[in-house]
Image (cartoon, rainbow, N blue to C red; front, side, top):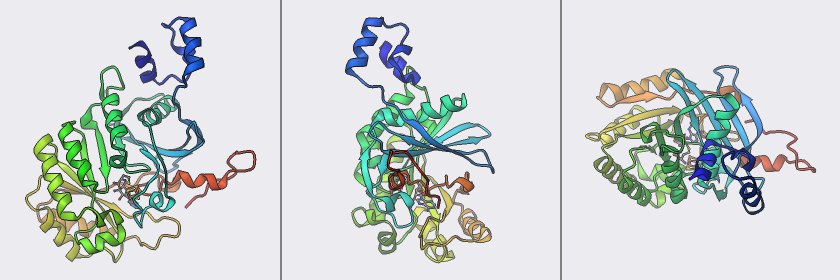
Amino acid sequence: MQVFNWINKGITNFDEMTDISKELREEFKLKYAIPDAVIEEKFVSKIDGTIKYLLKLHDAEFIESVLMKYHHGYSICISTQVGCKMGCKFCATGKGGFSRDLYPSEMISQIHTAQKDNNIRVSNVVLMGIGEPLDNYDNTVKFLKLISSHQGLNIGMRHISVSTCGIVDKIYKLADEKLQVTLSVSLHETNDEKRSQIMPVNNKWKIGEIIKACNYYFLKTNRRVSFEYTLIKNVNDSSGHAKSLIKLLRGMNCYINIIPINSIEGGIYGECTKAEVINFCNILINAGVTATIRRTLGLDINASCGQLKARNVKTFLGRNNKIESIQQN
Ligand code: SAH
Ligand code: SF4
């Protein structure tokens, strides 16, 4: 229990375990390593103070996390995998391929690192960084249980959101855990054929199956499900799309988060104007659907949804394994 407490406090060295004998600490040093995520680069937005961290893991893999300040406190967007297998066409992570799953300790490290670096306490956690959390299910659930425990970071489950592209069998499994976390589903389309074109995962699980799973999630947890809808110019942004969205979600206890698409390098998907985004959102609101437009933070440092892609940084490693440049979108 003492060791658990220290690890949960985010120590990075066994010598910081001051209530454990020196002999035992020496033994630990020989046998174990404390999981860590070391800051390799830090980008601070001049616009809103959002901080994007490029973190190096023990095996020289890279991930990113983003710390945002809201009026109610600090929120962190963390990565759950190195890369992602899902290959969504509009997402920088999806383009970079997959390397490996993150351990629960590596997810926790992202929070500790940001907290220590800024001497703050994080109150909200969103699993919306690099990776698909439900494709790393067991580690994600362990992480959720650890950070919400009283001996851990004590971040209430209701302050945590898990975002998924729609891994249906795992939505059912998560519902049965009855964890009280917010489930966010990245929907982006209401037509199966079109959704499959931009999100290959839709070839396996169709929209109807996702909706059924979300209803089950609500039934089991009594938590309102949130749907992310990334608005892409001339792809899913017409008033017809808004109407199909209203029809699809009618009667569900849910809310919609409209995310204006963030352009990615080489991306073929265009951004809607501010007026078009507002108009789309208003169609939903006028039909009685709860909808909000996601505030885009950290625009100048490419810290927004879908722009994280740290794995590619490997390409830029110099001969002495030092980063020589970071590719900016
Ligand atoms: N894999 C999970 C969580 C990480 S992606 C998921 O897909 O839900 C986090 C969110 O960013 C998702 O809603 C995703 O669809 C969205 N996203 C991806 N690329 C984006 C882009 N270029 N612009 C805006 N949102 C994007
Ligand atoms: Fe993976 Fe989510 Fe990006 Fe799709 S949007 S590729 S699921 S990280």
